[in-house]
Structure formats: structure tokens, C-alpha cells
Image (cartoon, rainbow, N blue to C red):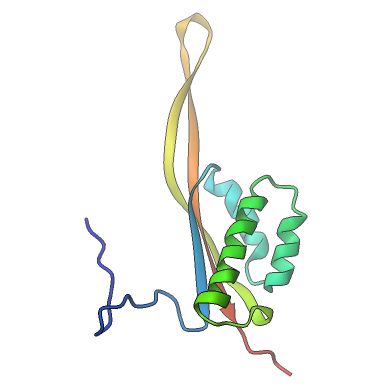
Length: 133
């Protein structure tokens, strides 16, 4: 199964998000999707300054990786799409499954126990909103 990208009349790739949005994605994050979703859920719908503060002071180990993805989305918005970073909110933060490494742990009497090491992927979309005065 091949994935084809949509292109405009000049052959350039079309944007996958709206004109007032930017996204960043990280794959192969070594944590289960359920644990990663708890951190992603904490920043959904927040302004980016508030989301950064939440992640910086979170006690979860994975919060550092989520902060890197959020910073990447903010940088994409500013540099690639010319959006104002003071008016950005985290519009979407969703988690997907990736591969699962299967290992075993030796147990008594020659038996083995299965150990699953899941990987996840994280996508963050930031949106520019107009300030209501």
C-alpha cells in the first residue's frame, strides 16, 4: 500500500493542516500509548505558554519528550507558516500506536514470561486564534 501526496498545479505538496495551523509529529516514543495520552490530555486546548509550563513541571518521565514535540510545533508555526506564537493554542494532541518489541523473561523451572515493550507516536497541532478584545 503506497501513500500518495496531494499536489497543486505547480507540483508542490499541499498542506495537511489549515492555513492558521502547524503540526509536529514524533514517532517511536518508547512508552505505551495509554501513559503518553495522560500527558497529551493535560495540554489539549491550552495556550502554548500554559502548556509549556504544565509540561516543564510535570512529574511524568515522558513530559520532556512531549515538550520537545510542542516546541517543534511552535517553531514550525513561526518559521514555516509565519504565525504569531503569542496567540497559539494546542488545538489537537493525539497519540497513536507503533510497534511492540516482544521479549521474554526467564522464570523458574525453564518457563518464560512474555515482556511487551510498546512504542507510540505523538502528533501535536497548534492553531492561531484571534484575541477577543
